[in-house]
Image (cartoon, rainbow, N blue to C red; front, side, top):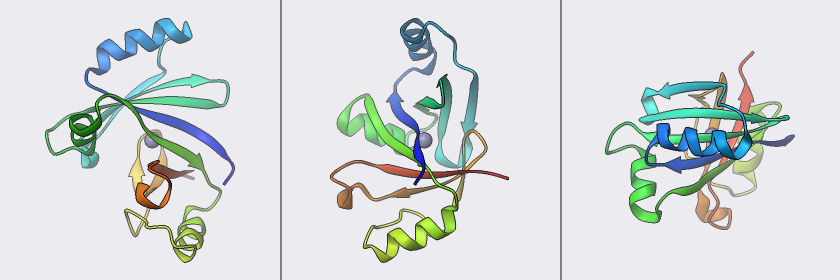
Length: 133
Ligand code: ZN
């Protein structure tokens, strides 16, 4: 794994949170993007070479809606950049981690992504992401 690529934060209202984080960072988000398959709308803030991703649910069965219902707003996942997502998925599976998807999925911000089950990672939802070439 190369570095922390971004931290994902679950929010109830993307517009209101964009404003909070704009004030916090003193700069605006650089993009908004919906990921229909995940039922989320995302917004990205860049800080040097890492990012903050805000996530708002777009439907009731979205993982973000379920997360907020259970735990409230807050840090949802940490994403690590990998060079080759296929070989990292295989390596981590061999180490006993549980992958939440067997094939990389299309994520926001031009990425291939895979999530690891938090039960094997001390309760932290981990995302692997690789820039699409
Ligand atoms: Zn993410």
